[in-house]
Image 1 (cartoon, rainbow, N blue to C red):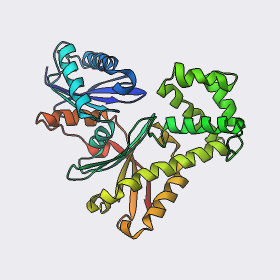
Image 2 (cartoon, rainbow, N blue to C red):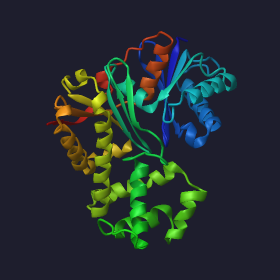
Image 3 (cartoon, one colour):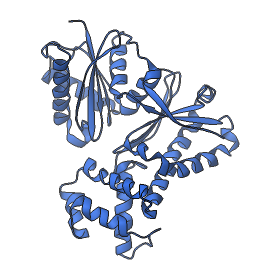
Image 4 (cartoon, one colour):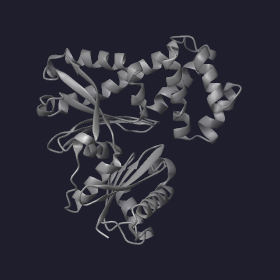
Length: 343
């Protein structure tokens, strides 16, 4: 069989594998659970990747014992060089039939490689959050991506945590809530299947799962859609803090990225962007304030893009590029424009 190139999108909740032929055609796709090695441990992470790739090989009609030419992994938590080196060594030792070559990068870089080869800003808001500027010369600048203990602002986890904290602080008479807590309090009890706040301690500490806790964001999104003022307030704040990530990287953006037809391209990755309508006001407020500063006068337009295909595609492309093979990707077919704004 002709050479196969694999790509992995490894998220904090869901993961995906694609297998691609050398002419850029997608031959198989598989889905799986979290593959963030910081959350599930490297052993479980690698086992899950091996299972997904083996399943994809079967779907593509390939022999699972024949290694891929390359496997490019676009992983949340794929930033640290020493950790990446260890993961690759473990893959080679434990699963020699998996792939001949490996390339591991972050979820942000994999997403951008799926959308364009010209650069832009990736703003991730899924289970966690992260912002990465990739300039046309390949230089990178980051803001965020430090996980739920040190960051994840504007993510599903952050939104869920904000809501729970407001309820706790109100009931403790520690803080006056910005709006009535009745809906959020009941939604919290229903989602976590508890009857009082003490019941939540198990979920917060003894059996804590980041993706499970972040899943409460979905109930808050439903509340915001139904018009609950506290839910809408929290999503508005999420819009503000996500926009502040853009402001953080603005000084380092190559001016050519402002001059394209789209203005500054911002690739929005993660399920929280499905609630864009509730975040829009806060997002625009922060970027309008930044635009008023003389330093950012060339920032006159931006476009928000969403991937139509998994960033596993970008992972596969980067993995192939790493061994000198260029996979032809149709970038225009990989993204949708969902919002454009001119100042």
